[in-house]
Length: 152
Image (tube, rainbow, N blue to C red; front, side, top):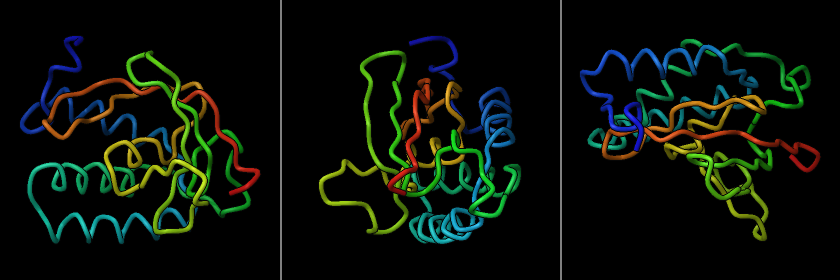
């Protein structure tokens, strides 16, 4: 693990600032923004551990991300329904479809936006690398390689 990945979110100014910077570079559709509210409410109801961190991460996206009409968003931005290819810590490429509820196709590997990975990927642009918060409070790095919204 790198020095960054070993840092913890709670009480660590560096980790918090890094996540705020990531949120500020994100672009959300209005539909994604509405769905993030639902994910935050669900995480707040549980309110402990990874769910508390998830609510904070999604809250930062709501606070700092640019929100655009659904049809005006950059095609290289990950949105709900997008098929994304990414790599964690520059390891094996993985692909999945971002989803908010149950709308992803059954043949797809789904990445729920209400998870730490999905919450990180939503709104990211292709070729960006950002911290990926883990349930234990440590960080890894995720690199968004491609976004396909043709079937979104």
